[in-house]
Image 1: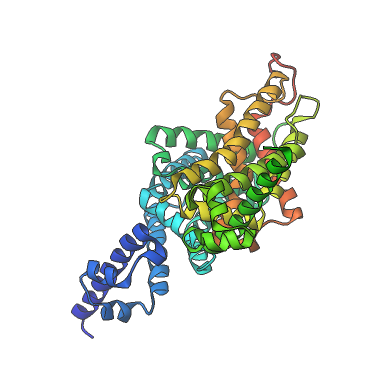
Image 2 (image 1 turned 45 degrees about the horizontal axis):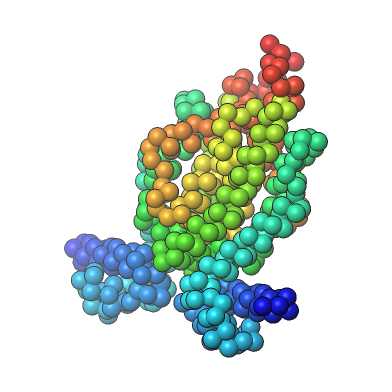
Length: 219
Length: 219
């Protein structure tokens, strides 16, 4: 197969996934039809099935694509720290950027849809968890290790601390949008205020006051 | 109407709500039928409609009943503080009891169902929010005010601090169960460990070291 054909196949696949996102997010898993998805993507239903063997497989691909795409965007915007940035600056940047990227009507509706279908499609919840919160928590653990080595943080259980930080940031805001709808999405000023206080709480508990590694605090 | 009739009506209503919970939680809102609910409750469909004007109204009553019931149980178990208990003891009791009461397969499935239906039935999400997290946050705000007056906590924005505490406790555990299913429900030892660390984090940020109210910390 030549390069042109490959690119066309990729474009078709992307068009189908995009059409699937629109249909699934609007109508739910049961409500969406493969006919409508094919029509919206401008391809035949046969073509849809040539790319995705079933409605379930298309749904999983759509969830992984949207969640993974947001994670990639987040990583491009907030680089993993190498220790040059003060820890509070990194944490505030991480927190505000994550809220800005994740709290869109589309990703929030995806999350509602996945949660509502977890009984029927447990692999969807696992995919969203792996590509969403777990990826953030893993990034935070790695960052905390660097700041511990620099003596800026004092953490025994990196994964536990990363999980608490992630949910200090996302817990209230995401839960409110899950239950109260998109009007509960925070505006920029509220994101800033929320992130500042969450980071203050976290550093009160895990900050080492920036003392050099290995040096105990003054008695 | 005599007392006996009143009691019978209440019993019928409770039987219908219980049957509704079983059907809705098992089959979802669209999947559940009023015929099945009536049969399970051992009443006629007419009787169901005499108590609840529509499937929607019955769904809302079921959500409010289950969520409010859990909140009542929680309040009976963990009394609002009057200041006799040390703040850390109150907070750990609050946190562990809330996790034990809320993280049941039934309440977690209710939550998934409500989130999945928020687009169609926004009043469900509002009811769960009001009877669930908002009620906890309001209880915490009132408790924090007492402990601030006693000089055990130093908090400027009670509602903000209560919201952070609530999601320090519930954020990770509830989110994991939403996405990963009931096998992610914490066992007793994990609840205890989680609550201890969450309270430690909170008190590092908002504790006033138990100094008497009005007395500044030592310089």
